Length: 324
Image 1 (cartoon, rainbow, N blue to C red):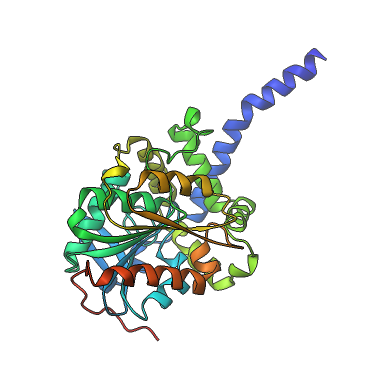
Image 2 (cartoon, one colour; image 1 turned 180 degrees about the vertical axis):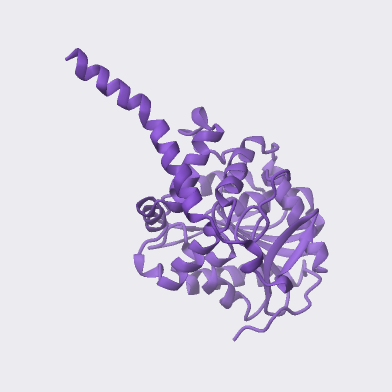
């Protein structure tokens, strides 16, 4: 029995090292693409020395679309196409994600990302815009609205992370570089883990078409992706305190009723904390509600945005590319 116990203890002690080694191998086996071979120079703007990749389509009042942790603008093809029928949509890859640069020394905290978004707006001639933020992008949108109130009209927070609660409670005691890096590499490159993560984000797997899977997978194959997302994850612990009562813009909280990643408790927490917010819940949808129920989500979002156009018209609405 003593020998068996020692073997079990030894295995338990070795498991973290084995996982780390496996994650290290996954990272090096998969991340081989070069950013410059994938992105169109016409869809890149440099802000504070960081090349940010974006899509600028449609015409009308400008709307920014901010994705979540580990995502990119490629997560929202249906939402972008629908919204671009009536608005100028600027969807961007946040620093460290998608086809944007993976900077080593930049401020990748939520407030740092908000500064980069504001810089991109200036580069594109957008003085003021409505902002849609999904998951972590919602927290960044709140930092943007609080720090640059003159630049933000209305806010749509979709399955939004809550500022100050960005790191899951059960991970806080072990939120250290080797742990975070291993988690990131497994989620990006271990096929069963990646599939579980994607499936948990949708009500029906039918949403995960081969085209969407390929589009979401591609950025993870760029060199330095695991390192960049690890740095973003660690930067969450350095988020500046945000007083949500200071966010004065009208806010729409849009949630999938069955969201497993950011459940309705977070929505209700935001609803209580924000001075001018309302909550809309879409049934039979999870975290990727914008793609799962695009028509329903679009109708709610456009109704909310258009209600404010007469009173707080965003400026800088030069047209982007046409969308059929």
